[in-house]
Amino acid sequence: MAGALRVGLLGGSFNPAHSGHRAISLAAIQALGLDEVWWMVSPGNPLKDKATDMAPFAVRFASARAMAGHAPIRVTAIEQRLGTRYTVDTLSKLQRLYSRIDFIWLMGEDNLVNFDQWKGWRHIAKSIPIAVIARPGYDHAAQ
Image (tube, rainbow, N blue to C red; front, side):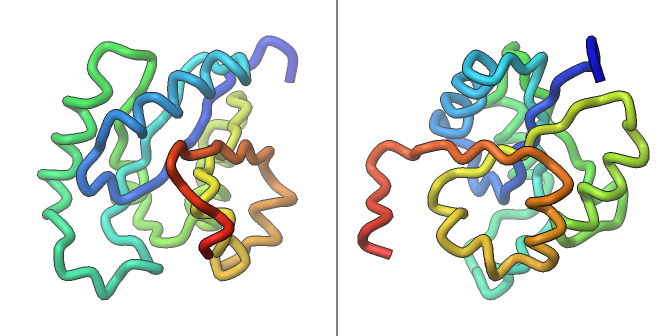
């Protein structure tokens, strides 16, 4: 859609949010011509459910807001608000609710390694452009 708002979506636990999240978001805004990036702080990551060191949602959300600062980054509790647990369901609802926004899924290269384990990964790949972002210091060959 010409002239539509272009929004990058970065989902994650943000446990805690850190400068790397901010850096890849700002790089994506510049490289992809995004208007803003929405950080979707997950109430619980299905692939990390066994993690016992997960901070409470409110703490992670506050951490993300502090790290985002005044950048064109919107920290959201979309998954909590929509009652979704899986990215495929969240994206389907977002695309229906915000049909005038062009969404781009932002994914760190570390998540690409296990993308085929995500529920509905083929549907995700067909329904939204995906930008895979290199993570400095991440060695994908070690996976």
